[in-house]
Length: 343
Image (cartoon, rainbow, N blue to C red; front, side, top):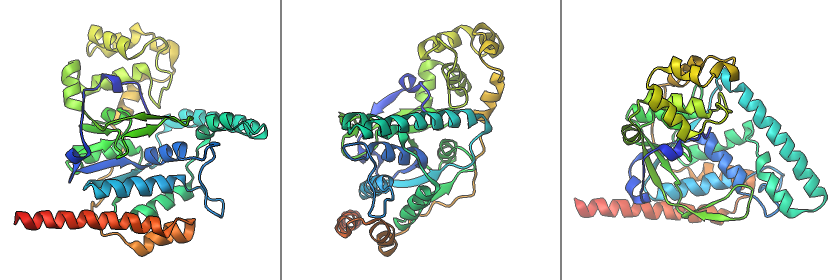
């Protein structure tokens, strides 16, 4: 989603080593979209195999996952299920944005305007059902557990953490906190840099750990009040929020009205902006469907299945697979040596 509350959350810079041995829940759709948006040719077109199939998502997923596995992180990927009915309008908006971006991309392509092509290409990214299945096949081959959420992946990730089955949610935004996630890890990669969407530029980044309890304590809020704040500034279920209200103003309003939400929403003239009852939005976050029907088991890499998905089906270099497998084996050997020395 990307609701504008991240700046309000308490955070601290961490190192990859701080997460070694910890289970991290990843919203798969969110990460795959990141790869589809940023891993592209200079003119903005996605990477493809010889059959014309997009491979940007597989390249990113394979590289990121194996690198983090080699660092001793235990990843679990959660896939979205049926979206809430309230999200339909946002899905339509995104489809319209993609359609408009595609038109502009084609116009730039006709003029061979590479800069304009690159500008709009990332906005046309679309995650298809086939791509999702390919991603699942790749993760299974890597021995990484996957979970099918009944609805929003972020809510299921938060549930894993609340159950004590995962340490934190991996995300670039703070939306998981609205579902009660205790911790969020941001900027999780080994390169120390991130490509800016729709550009060729990179920016330096460091992993950060954001905590819910510390944030609520600093804000002197309950988690329910955090959801109310998000509703005021806008979520996937009411994207516009209330015009003129950003995080700072929403924070001030909540300090003035406390938990008297009826008074607060009357003050911002909610009914002038929405036919939807704000209580419906609140309960959507609080009662998002999640499942306990999952098993977290990390298996050894099935290299034959891995080569089938990447080399046979999508023209990946066999050498790339071998290099990644060697790194994982070196990592495993180092772990065993360390254990042996300890014993």
